[in-house]
Amino acid sequence: MSERESVLGAPAGGATPREGTVTARSQREYEVDCGGVSVRCTLRGRLHGEGRSVLVGDRVVFRDVGASQGVIEEVRPRRNVLSRASGGKQHLYCANVDAVVIVCAAQAPPIRPALIDRLLITARSEGLDAVICLNKVDLDPEGEVVRILRLYRELGYEVFFTSAVTGAGVRELGERISKGVSVFSGHSGVGKTSLLRVLIPGFEGRTKDVTKRARGRHSTTEVYVVGLPGGGFVIDTPGFREFTIWGVAPQDIGSYYPEFLPFAGRCRYHDCLHYSEPECAVRDAVEAGHISELRYGNYVRLLEKHGLE
Ligand SMILES: Nc1nc2c(ncn2[C@@H]2O[C@H](COP(=O)(O)OP(=O)(O)OP(=O)(O)O)[C@@H](O)[C@H]2O)c(=O)[nH]1
Ligand SMILES: [Mg+2]
Ligand SMILES: [Zn+2]
Image 1: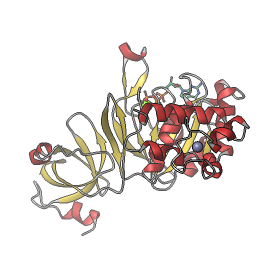
Image 2: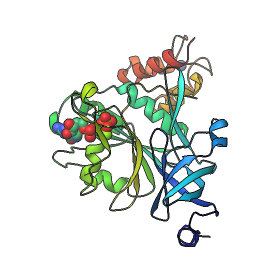
Image 3: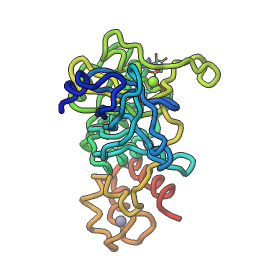
Image 4: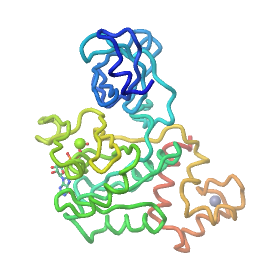
């Protein structure tokens, strides 16, 4: 049965289970899109009991319990799931996505290259495309941050330079994400929702005034999906304060640094962590200027934080 048929065919107050996609999630409620119609759902007690989480992007089976109201009974197997760690706990935040757009700002808030690396590793470890978007280039078009992001581009990463204020680069970004589902990920205040406002005419974004915490800024407070006019869907997320990678073994971190690969095979130890081992070809390459100190420094920071006990 197609989604459309299921919408039209469901009896009022419906006993027939239907399937849809979770498009938003607040404290206790989920919005489920079923053939273009939005249904507000709660979670069946049993799923609560099993500690099963329902994420934006999940395909779910739900049962109608009233006008535009339903109860989620089952979560379909996921293609992938994005998670991060903070406070030593894993937080899942969306499922079934195709690409992660790592949004950072040329200025305000300051860039943290190690964070970009963490997000790149998280995306790649889930087999997802990763795209970097340096926003607010209007504030500092030729500054240090732009130079750092050019380095990432030289390393083969896809980097877009955008401004939600002047509109520069936003069309190119929109074209890149016009297929599948992308998630905008990055610190609070880098301009994720502002970029969506440029990409989607008339779109306001789901924000709340967080007067106390953020001096009247309109921070995104929930994860939700929105469609782009040229095709594709974007998941907007609340900016995070802390993002730690989860589920990547220390000895694997180096494999996410493509510039290490030509040298890593020449280290004395085949399981070299390129940290303090003797005759490490990667460290030699950093000293010789073949690998950027910035990237190697990020690597060491990740290793020290996640790997070395
Ligand atoms: N100069 C400049 N300011 C921008 C740009 N994009 C966003 N801003 C401003 O930066 C601030 C934060 O923008 P938001 O879009 O709310 O940032 P966000 O990433 O969605 O933040 P959270 O929802 O808290 O995660 C707002 O005051 C925007 O007007 C830009 O390209 N240039
Ligand atoms: Mg936002
Ligand atoms: Zn080494």
